Image 1 (tube, rainbow, N blue to C red):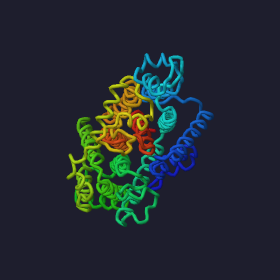
Image 2: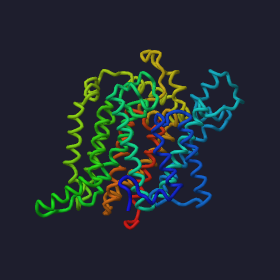
Image 3: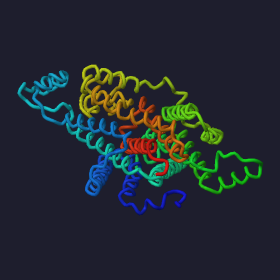
Image 4: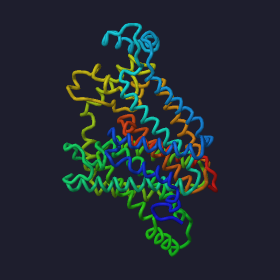
Length: 461
């Protein structure tokens, strides 16, 4: 048996437990969006990778993950190419705009050597972060081979998500007068331990669907009961068990998400849930999870009534009044036109953007495009964007196929939660930069690993 909040057997597995602890820690120091914080996360992951290889060697991943993992490794190799010194003549062949910068801005001669990246230091940082995420994916996809491990990962995310929501609500309702995690003084919105409310919303987009997944996995719900006495007994077991805990956490997370005022986060999550339930309907057969719809709708309505839509309503009324993000994207497209094939180098957006910045944006500093796909294109070109989207897309397709065929209630529920979470953050990436936040990116890759492991794992695992 297990504790209500964590499978007891995982505590006796130190390496796997250490990885869960690293993931649980990642959101705490401002979403690990500081150099020391993401470096700590990366060092921990690389150490666990070394220990795993020393003990087990190179364990092949499940079949469904082999092609995506190969694409991710090719993607890492591609990012490493940006750090290699090359003759200016070679750079001129593959990226004339990059060669022009070196030739006219730095006065470089044809015999000089430079990197494809216009900011090699930032590219090295970006490669290390990317390698950390791929390392998390590999460690999980080869170790999520038992039920308690798969459930343990989901429970860990839900526990951290619940604590984040409580932290955010506590700060919000006390006027942020005693922020538990030090943040800039001008940040007064609901953002938990994250600096930005949209990135807090991104983390809620990952945690909330997994809470729904654990709710779906409740075995007593959805059975056919004859008579009101049986129904009362079922309801009593539900309220006295962990089911009530999941519903309570859902209400808290939904409230925190709404009060964050993140339009993109709310819309992306609603869209992802709608697509998830559509896939459940299309799979045919038993629709046991659909019986939870009244509960989920009640939680959503309850959260809206409790908050009165709050900051979200205010942000909705301001649609069309904010032009900066549109201008940033327009400028980013201008960069893409000059560097379409290979980009300016991973992590170099903040260095290149000022060269193209429109005067309408003023003197403010912008380090992200507010569109993750566009930013990857700017930095890594169509090659890097194609490799990354092909890897992630193939994993999502494997999860969709698994959702159609799985019969085990736990695996089907975890598949649903993982798929909705990943789809939500992928949709939110069109208007924000959650993938640039290490905590959110790490958990995104963790849920990809969980989803594909549940899609292919044996029912008896």
